[in-house]
Image (tube, rainbow, N blue to C red):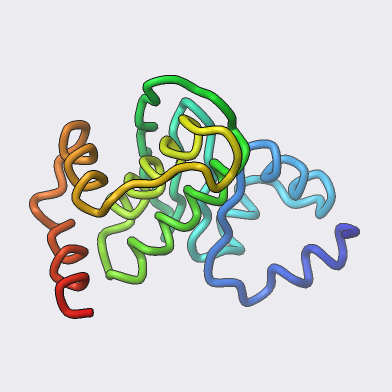
Length: 150
C-alpha cells in the first residue's frame, strides 16, 4: 500500500495492533510520526517482542511485559496469537492491561512450538500458567464461566 491509501484506510479505525517494525514502516509511508499515529487511533498496540508491548489509549501508555517462553522454537504466528488473545480479552470486557497480558501469553505459546498453529492448551492450563506469572484478581474466571454455559 502507498502512504496515502494506508492513511485513508486508518481513518475511523478503532484499534491497530502492529509490531515495532510495522509501526515504523507505517510512520515512514504515511509521514505520520508515532505520536501522530497514537493520536489518530483510539487504541494503538505496538508489540516489541521479548520487551513486551505498549498499549496507547486516551493519552496513556500501558506497558505490558512479555511472558518468558520455556524455549523459542519458531516466531511464526506469535503476532497473530497475540492479537487473538488481546481481542479475546477485549471481547470479555477485561481491562486493557489484562487483555494485553492474555495476548502476551498466547504469543508465548506460539513461540514455543514450530509453525503458527502447532500450539495447544486447555483453558485451565492457560489460566494456571497465567497466574504463575501475573495477577488477574480472579478476573480470568469469566472465561471458565463462559465455557460452562456453552
